[in-house]
Image (tube, rainbow, N blue to C red; front, side, top):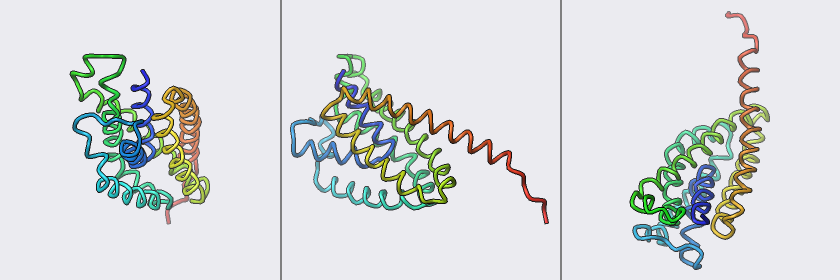
Length: 201
């Protein structure tokens, strides 16, 4: 059960930022006993790989804080974030331990699918709300929202590894934020459609 919550928490974090949970898992696997990477995932603890992830993270943190550029970055990350979610779910051995399921152990693709779906759902919400935040704040909200997402990804990653039971609480809070964000997006689109268009010429 705890392993499943760890996988869910990390893949949720990947939906916010693809590189933070990868970096957290890789560094902790090297320096602590909190993460034990299963066979086939030793590459994630390689310091050379982690250095590349750190560089990509630095670029992501800059690009995601610039209005308009953040939307382009989100489009690119539509592939990267779900893939990261699949990796971190599988790399923490969550699938093998998910409720002691022998089916999950025999079908490792299922852990990838779970991680991908969770990360993709979070990414879709983030991508939909960012243009609304940018338009509503004239771009000023972009760096604030991005910093909050980065902090959320780091916090969720650490909670998932060290206090997986709290992932339930974190996911409940995220669901509330998602509900609020979806309402804001819908209102924004309704206002945009109802706005009178200037006559041609």
